[in-house]
Every structure is written in C-alpha cells, then in structure tokens.
Length: 383
Image 1 (cartoon, rainbow, N blue to C red):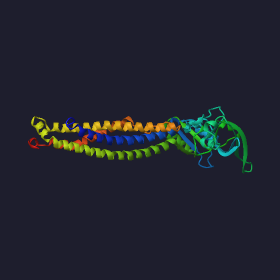
Image 2 (cartoon, one colour; image 1 turned 45 degrees about the vertical axis):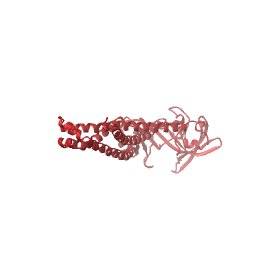
Image 3 (cartoon, one colour; image 1 turned 180 degrees about the vertical axis):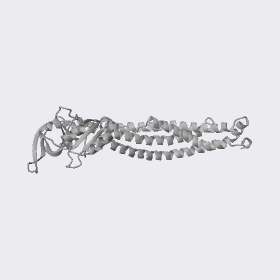
Image 4 (cartoon, helix red, strand yellow; image 1 turned 45 degrees about the horizontal axis):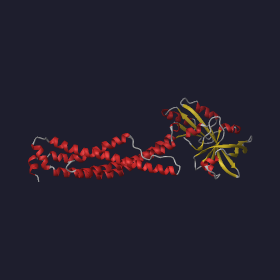
C-alpha cells in the first residue's frame, strides 16, 4: 500500500502528524511557560525558606524569638528584617520611602537578583534601592550607582509614661545596587549599619531549613510559638496546579485536531480494505491465516501512526524553536533576558510516540478485523 498508494498514505501520515504536532506544540508551550515563570521566582534557597511574621502586637519577633527559632535543630540560618519610615534626598529631590534594614542573606533567601550594581554582603556598607525608588530621581538605573544619598529615618520610641514619640535619625550612604521592584519605593540597608537604632522587634524573618523533608516540622514548631508562617513552595505548588489545568486545556484543543486526523486514518484503512478485497482472497487461498491478514493491516496502520508521531514531533519542535528564536530576538532588542517558552521533557516525547502509535493501532483494529473475517471465495469474486 505504501508503494502503490504513496500520495494517499503520505497525506494520511501528514494528517496524523499535524494532529500530533498541535498537541506537542500546545502542551510544550504550557510546560515552557510554567518553567519560565517558576525559574524567575524560585531557586534552591527560596524553596527551603520559610517566611515568619508576627500576627499581632501581642506576639513580637524580638531577639529572644530569633534565638529560639535559630535553636530549632533543622534550622540552618535565620535572616532578619526591620522596616522604618524614612525620607531620602538626592541633590534637590526628596521623597518618602520605606527603609528596610536586613541581614545580607535576606537577598539570597528571597531569590532577589540585582538589576544593576550588586547587593551588600556581610561587613559591607551601602544602600540598595528598588527600581521604583530609583525612578523617583529621574536618572538611569546605572547612573545612580555610586551616588550619595541622605536619609532621615523616623524611629518610634516608647516613653517612660507609656506614650510613643518619634525620634529622627539622619545619615548618608552610597547607592551600591538596584533591586528590581516596580511596585514599592524602598531602600535597603545592612542591619549592622542601623546598630544605633537599638532595634527591639523585627517585621519579618527568613528561616532557611536543612532540607525539604524538614519544612513541615519546622513550620509546625514555629506556628506553635504563635507566629505566622508562609513559604514560596506553597505558592509554587498552587502555581503548578494552575499550570497543569492550563496544559490539560491546551492538550484538549490539540486532541480535537488529532481526532480529525484519526478519522482520516480510519477512512484510509477502510478504503484500503475495499480496494484489496480481491488481494486478500488470493492471499488466503495460498495459505495465509486470518491472524496473518489481521497482523498485516495492524502493522500498516501502526506504521502510519508511528510515522505521524515522528512527523508531529518534528513539526512541533521546529515551530517551537522558531517562536523561541523570534521571542529571544525581540527580547535582545529591548535589552530583556532570554526566554524559552517551549519545553518538552523526554518522557512527554516518549508518551507522544506511544500515543500516536496507539492511535494507529486503534484506527486499524476494525478494518483489520473485517479483513480477517472475509470469506476467501467471496473475496476472490469481489469486484
């Protein structure tokens, strides 16, 4: 059949390939988008980090609480962060900002990366501005690095009679880095530079545990102490579930094209049965069994399904790479990071091949059964 009806066979294989290619393209798009987004927000440290905060003024994150959490056996490190109201001045421009004093490891545990310059390390000084705060001064991101800014920080203090007063602290520092954050105007300083503030309570902790298996135990222990605990792994789990639904929806649209292709293959095998009825009678008369006839039809249909799968993977992969190339060229033009929105795991490609071959088997099952049941005498007389 492959030799005597090459065009019809090729078009049947092409139809299956288009269906398989559509499924492969759409599901790979779902996988690629999932990995692109998750890779932007997660790394090994962030997935092993718990965010700890105080639920109310009745439960405070003070030094005693930090020491208690650090003493939990599965905890490797704790990074502290305290928030203050402040004003920042650069030249003749002044703006209200949020000042955050933090341990240098807070950046790593939160998965932050500098948009320009670098972050401060242990023992280093300097300020890190969010991109929203940097935009207030109307300068390019790189142009701010190394410039001096003046800070006025408002420190609430409790008096002897129980009232709260605000004390001002003034100081100057140098901008050493820019943090990508377009939503919040904030300035980040090392906690060591704020030692004169006499910080008693912290607004947030980043707690790094020693392994994924310890996350639940450490979380439960911290919750028992009255604190609120969240983790990026919870967000990633929810995002993964959402992307799984998206992949199912995209795969469903691809299956519509595949069903049309399967109907075309079934039609091809049925026509082949009618055209080869007389041939089947001859083969049966010279000794071929019903099993041989059935096997012949099934092998032909499975071969077309397999070749359709190969063609579909090729078409889907080529189109995906072309789209990736176009997106990366566009990203490079606008100084954006490279992206790869199409991803096909090896196991998924194997499943695609097994699935396409199975489609060929199923569509050839009925025609092969009919061919095997033909009476040899009736088949010889068929015209």
